[in-house]
Length: 193
Image (cartoon, rainbow, N blue to C red):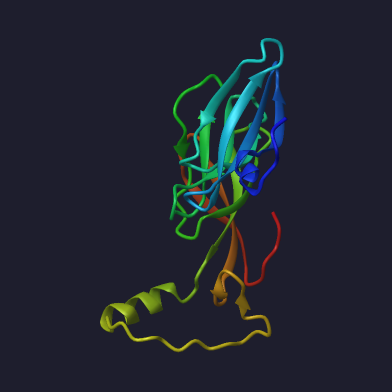
């Protein structure tokens, strides 16, 4: 019998978000990487009859929030390479290459399919002062610490430092075929899609 040690934690894998499609079960598999000091996630499927496991998306994209389109033609998920904000990716259920459907600067936080599978609604944020700050930073390209105005009681979070300034929260709709997005709703406070 093998003894359990603190190193055994790195051998554990977490399975989450199972989705059944015909004879296949899609799921996310997450493991802890000691060298990278990170959680790494990949997208897998298992055939219920043959028990064959297939990796669909590797750990480089780190997928989350997997969904199958209502017409059962697409696997959708949020993903982003290291250092990139998460975007909506699509991949044909019959196999093929995954591609990014969105390209939001602040990333996508959640999404939902329309009932006809022709489009998705998704939530993102924008910084209303981004253009003004960019112009100011271009004119003053020094390495000095910039002052921050605190306007909320909770202004700091462990692991993040000072939280983001005011943001605009948006819901957009994007067409799968045309890859064109349109703004549906914008608010100055957080809400859920």
